[in-house]
Image: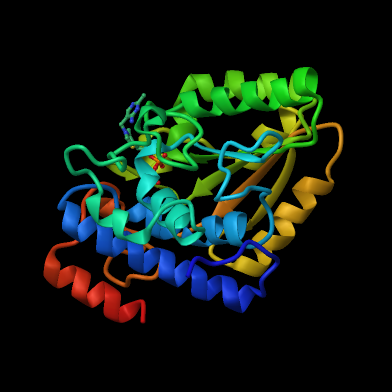
Length: 279
Ligand SMILES: Cc1ncc(C[n+]2csc(CCOP(=O)(O)OP(=O)(O)O)c2C)c(N)n1
């Protein structure tokens, strides 16, 4: 049975995040390629967004007018989005085992052309998803005049893309208080620690100077995430940015905080250990 979308307790959301993590491992080990670290590290954010009563959506009517939308700007992290959507009832969980297979709707980056319910945009070219999300929020506010909200998640390495800052500037300029971006701040990227590759800090000051409402929280703590999303929703007149500090690979001891796990799947033996650790 899919998990319902309501304001569950943090303990229940922790349990849901564990199931999302198990599904990430199960799909990656069969795919034999794909990204482990970011998806595992951000599972708590997805559990709260989709099963914590934060987003307004209907898995049985995924294109319902007036729904909230989520854009995974860091498209390579899609194993966590696929696992979340399946656990929320958008499509059968058995389909997770087709990840990256020829003909599957679950490709290595989300494709709108795959017609997978719950995927609102193709993403994967870093820096671009955020602009798409800002455009959606702008049209909801100015054209459709509804109260739908748009959420977008970026990686922290992704913030090194210049187009991110054009999107941020636009969201603030248009006062998009229906827009909330989340930075998965795990300090890791494809081939190193983020500050060693290209320093992005101080993040809070940067977003504040662009006129965002900034909320910092522990992105592996579901209670803190619930409070952060509440605060973003209550913020009027400006967009919000939740800087969610996470650990890459969170929940699996040998992957935790190791950038080497950015883009590889577990072997069968490693998956067995990971699943044991995840209960
Ligand atoms: C425009 C563009 N350049 C390069 C890449 C290749 N790439 C994929 S993920 C990644 C690193 C992203 O780091 P981060 O956003 O921190 O994600 P995490 O490592 O935490 O998953 C890079 C360089 C890409 N997908 N798009």
